[in-house]
Length: 222
Length: 216
Figure (tube, rainbow over the protein chains, first blue to last red):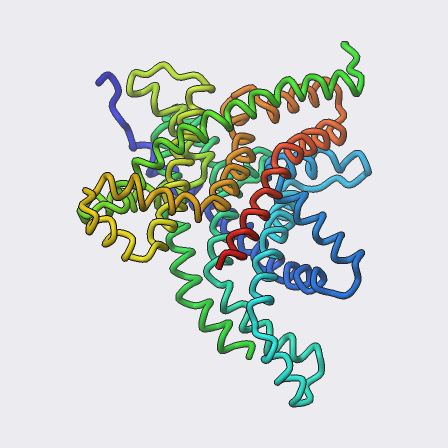
C-alpha cells in the first residue's frame, strides 16, 4: 500500500462541513414544506371535475418524473434567463427541488386520497360539514397518515438528490466537499467523510420524521 | 467560431444519447446480476449475512449517488486501479442498482406465502432448487412493475455521471451550450430526449401495475 489515509485536515474543516450541511437541511426543509402543500393542491386538482386541470397536472407530473433532476436544474438556472428570469442559485435550487418534489408527492398524496373510504366523506357530509372542511378535517389527515412512510422516503431521496445543486454553485454539503478537496488534495478522505455525514443525515431525518411527524399529523389536524 | 444549426445540436445530442443508453443497459444488467447475489444474502438463513446485505442496501440508499461516484472515481486510484470516467460510472451505477434491485426483489420474495417454501420442501427440493424453480420466478413476476420503474430511475441517474466527466448526454449538452449559448434549446432538447427514453417505460410500468391489480 503506497497510500496512507490522512484525516488531519478534518479539524479545520468541520466549520465548512457544518455550514454545508446546514444549507442542505435548509433546502430540504423549504422543499418539503412547499412540495407537500403544493402537492395537496395538485392531487386535489387531479381529482377535480375540470378535464383541462386534470390533463395539465398529469402532463406536469409525467414531464418531471421522466427527466433527470440535473437537467431540470440546468434548464431552470441556465435556460430561463433567456426570458429575463435570472435566478439566484439558491432560489433556482429551491425552485427546481420543489418542482421535482411536487411531481412525486402529488402522486403519493393522490394515492392517499384514493385510499380514504368514501363512507368517511359521506359521513362527514351527513354531519353537515362544508366540503372544504370535510377535505381538511376528515380526508386529508387520514390520507397523510396512510402515505407517511412513502412521503418520508421521498423526502430523503430528495435530500440525497440535492447534492446535485452543487453544480450551480449553491454552497451546500457537496459544494463544500468540492472546495475542501481542492484545498487539501485529499479527495477520497473528504468525500468519504461527507458521505458519512449524508448517511447520518438520512438516518437522522428518517428517525425524526417517524418520531414526530406521525403523531403531529394524526393529532394536530384532525 | 463554428455555427451550430438546430439540426447540428440535435444530431450531436442524439449521438451522445447512445452513451446514455449504453450505460443504462450495462448498469442495469450488471446491477441485476449483483443484485441477485445481494438478494440471496438478504434472504439467507444466516443472520449475519442478512445483516450484511441490509447494511449494504442501507448504505447505497442512504447516501447520494453523486458521492458514491466521487468516492469510486477518487478512491479506486488510491488502491492502485487506473480508473476512467466510464469505469467509475459503470461500477458506481451497477453497485447502486444492485442495492435497489435487491431491495425490490426482497419485497417480492417476502410477499410470497410461506406455504410456497413448504411445498418446495415437501417435494424434496433443496434450497437452491426451491429458489430457482418456485420462489424467484414468482418474486420476479410480482415485482416486474417496480423493476421497470427502477430502470427509469437508473436512466435518469446516468445524468450524474456527467459530473465525473463521462461523455454522455448531459456532458455533451454542457459543451454544446458553451459553444452556442442557447441553453433553453439545448437543455430543452436534452429533457425531451430523456423523456422519449423514459416515458414508454413509465407507461409500461403503469400497464404492469394495472395487470397486477386486476389479478388480485
